[in-house]
Image 1 (tube, helix red, strand yellow):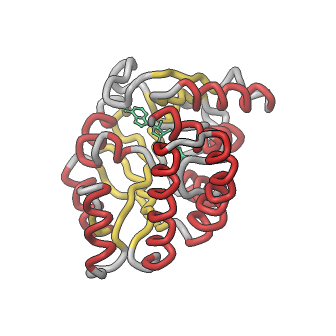
Image 2 (cartoon, rainbow, N blue to C red; image 1 turned 90 degrees about the horizontal axis):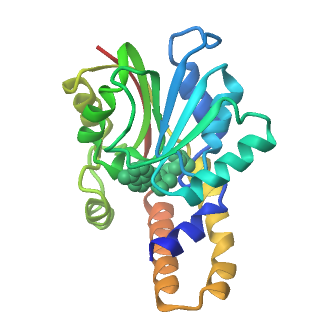
Length: 246
Ligand code: SAH
């Protein structure tokens, strides 16, 4: 099942809602000189097109981490094609078992990935690898209204029980030793045009190649997620949170 999910997602530009504008907007809100020689980690990088956006936007050395080599090899290939292989290193490991020295990184990046560890646990663990006073930038699914219809509340709670309002996400950040610098929510186009449309366009070929009950179930679940997003998109989004370790 895992292999099928990887196959469906690995040829997608990104593995979650995205835009280059959102990545650079988050990056540009970090109050630092961007052209210093610094170290950045991209945790749960997937095929890493945001890793490449970051590398092209800075002089950084970026260490990109993911659990699946299928994703990392795609990133290595793309980085090489762009001549960025000396500044992007990949490490295949779990995000809760990072092989780095404490306080090694200036910036820890993580788009649409911290949920794999849980938001609070993920914040606490990532903090170990950040230098004091340096920055974390991450996106996390968040309610953007105080109340919402039961159907989406129940669906999203089952998918990810830690889903919460933006204000509560900020409180969690602050309760775990970070100071919020800025935040914003991803626009509809990051979800619909950039992510879901690209994913939907792959369903037919994916099902042709993998005629199985498992593949059908995966597509059915993706379609359900997409339909619910279209119906309830004013109630939730990905919040991008940029914070400083204190
Ligand atoms: N950051 C990318 C990918 C997001 S999808 C983007 O924004 O497009 C979430 C990623 O987390 C996937 O690539 C998945 O393989 C990775 N992942 C899931 N569990 C993980 C774990 N325990 N350790 C490291 N990476 C993990």
